[in-house]
Image 1: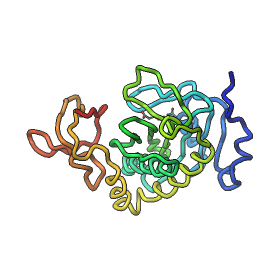
Image 2: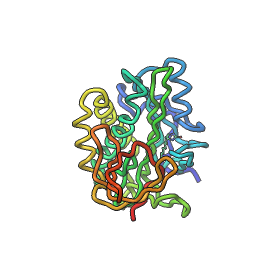
Image 3: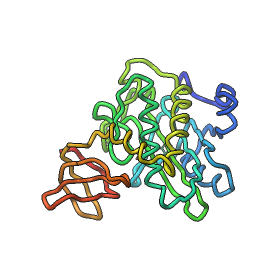
Length: 256
Ligand code: BTN
């Protein structure tokens, strides 16, 4: 059965002209990140949004799949052309997660950040972000997936998941969540080159790991310790038995 609110091309007419001219809607694609990379290579400009209803090969971080039933979530990717791609990649990941958390808060949930960019509500993941860099072509792709009206999740997910529907008990307008996310993304992504200090402070306010004991893998080594927050560069600060470690990339982080 077709989900009652499945989007088609009419979604563009429902968006305000400002947004409609930035959004490229695809009823189905493999991954919006792949479409954004393809379009970015062709010169599609800064802040263009590739939005779809169905991803047949949605991707998460670390090669995981990202699935969302049509009509129940958001899957889109933003093309971002910063002043410098390689150096600003990790900042964009933090900025995007924070932006989505701030947007979701407007829909009644207390959204926290699990480093680097998972958005968590009540210990469950509600949104995931996949930032990819096309260094030579000079752009980033910021892919965003949000669980909005999802009521069932597969039992084999790496982490427990939730949605706005499960948290609030009522369906939420996906158009409204989309517009709110895009507005916050514009604001926070503008801060990756100027204003990162403020961005990081707001990100830290929402960090769900600070003070918690975790186990993670970095560079093939398992590390256990207590999270002390993030560095001025956005790296994770982990206090282990041997001292303070600065983690720039890690596999799945598990609370202990
Ligand atoms: C993660 O938490 O592992 C990241 C998930 C990112 C999913 C989004 S959905 C839109 C965009 N297209 C993709 O293939 N992935 C991202």
